[in-house]
Image (cartoon, rainbow over all chains, first blue to last red; front, side, top):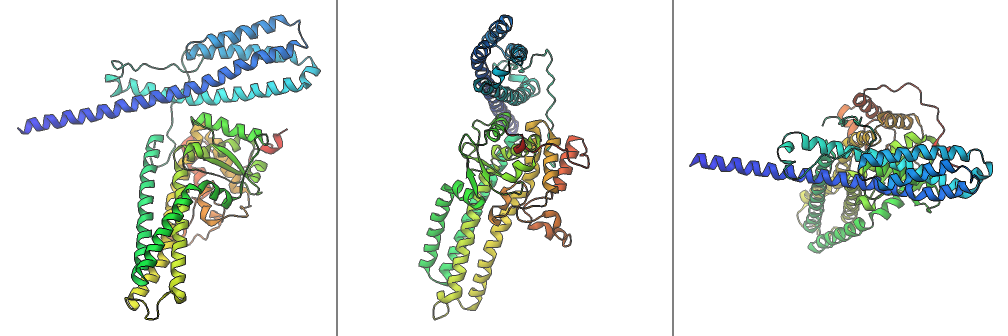
Amino acid sequence: MLALWIALGVVALLLVLFVLGYNRLVRLRQETNTGWSNIDVQLQRRADLIPNLVEAVKGYAAHERGVFESVTEARSALLRAATPRQAAEANEQVTAALGRLLAVAEAYPELKASQTFLRLQDELTDTEDKISAARRYYNATVMRFNTAIQSVPGVLYARPLGFREREFFSAEEADRVLPQVDLAPGS
Amino acid sequence: MTLQEQIRANRLRTGVLLLGFALVIVALATLLATVLDVWVGAFALAGALVYALFGVLGSTGMIASMTGAEELPPEQLRSLRRVVENVAIAAGLERTPDVRVVRDSAPNAFATGLTPAKSFVGVTTGLLETMPRRELEAVVAHEIAHVRNRDTRLMTLAVVFAGVIALVADIAFRTMAYGGGRRDGGRGGPIVIVLAVIGFLLAPIAATLLRLALSRRREYLADATAAEILNDPEAMALALRRLELDPTTVRHADASVAHLWIESPTHRVEDAPSGGSALAGLFDTHPPLAARIAALEEAGGFRLPDGLPDEAPFIATLA
């Protein structure tokens, strides 16, 4: 009789642990989703700014066709990207192409002084800052989520229940996100 | 301590705070009812509850006026808004808190609000005039950390409740002292009167201690979280060092909101007399900045250089 009660107790305990662990995984996954949508919003904003910027530069330097093409190409790669890694790669491509575009703009003082151009450039800088802020949060949430489903007890049930590792928002093969250090004293 | 643990702990503390508030108010009302009249007690209880309700609902405006924080028109200080936006994104907040500015030359900052979505971050003009961008970001990250782990809700409630308790105790004490006591000298004789006086004196002290007890360890936690959000513990330590070296304090510092600020606005913790050991620290709203810097240095494995980096303050970099 006693053995039965103990067995029941153990089962109940395991069940509770499982429910808590499962809920934690769901929460962590939700955090990565939020993190990703933050990045996505900013990538979209960056892509939306590009045509205007190209138009602004074109007004002064219409002959620099190669540069415009590479920017437009990078932009459509960004809009096509289906995974975080592809998006990160395309985003770097955009950064490189925009760098060339802005270098072209350097040669035209009137363009550099135009209000439209200045405003677009300012917006672009802001978007880039926000992308890197959103990247920091997203990669940290991915790190937490992946660690949770790769370590005990998550590893025991995460896969069968459909939890899959998330990709980092990073163009590199092996991401170099530093492990989270808990800085709080006495905790 | 993870974020979830902090939020859970804060929820618990909020519950304890509500309970403690209810107990103190009921105790005060009971005291009034025994010493003076049942109706006086009932009236005090009802008044306190109504006042608390309106206090909680209007807490944002109340704290804004107690600190002198002004709302900015959207086009003004766009760069400051951007700094707050970027930090909020890096912290994973769903909505960026509003920014308000306190016209005061002492560098300081605070955050308040009952929910993350309704919070605002207040910075003094002095902060913008002394801190370079990197350190300003760290200060904002510290405030965002308070918002994210629900410290702000707890602190905002604490401000309101402590205010209510102090007011009720004050009115009760005055009522008793000046003619409130009936001609027959109350009901229970001198012992009850003495107890009542002690009770009324203790209430504001209890309220103050409660508020202070809430405030101190969380500063370390918010420093650590800010360092984590920005991945830059050195920036946080530098910002604290700059606050430490700055001799000014906020002019219109209201003692009842002292614990909201990143640095104690009422007095320099370091200047407090060092005697009295444990008791000396009991009434401080903030741990000493030096201790907070040391905690960051230890956790981040770095040492701050003696001087501060000679960078242009944030406001000077604005166009």
